[in-house]
Length: 65
Image 1 (cartoon, rainbow, N blue to C red):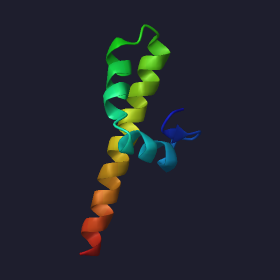
Image 2 (tube, rainbow, N blue to C red; image 1 turned 120 degrees about the vertical axis):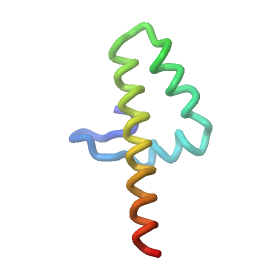
Image 3 (cartoon, one colour; image 1 turned 90 degrees about the vertical axis):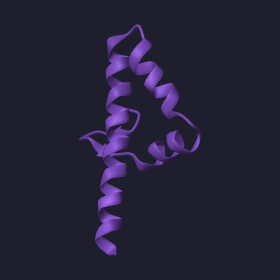
Image 4 (cartoon, rainbow, N blue to C red; image 1 turned 45 degrees about the horizontal axis):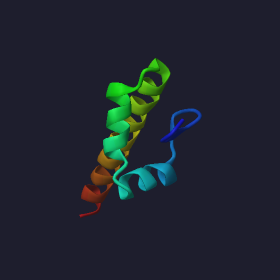
């Protein structure tokens, strides 16, 4: 799992590496163009985990204000 550890726990280290190195474009490309369905699903799951982590961190920071 690229962005989620077993049990669908966020792997923040991998997520940050992907975000900081413009990896989102590559992950989107894998989602759309990979010939293997498993790779497509893993890439889509990675995008979902990153999006949910961003939403979760924004909600928490809004609660602090």
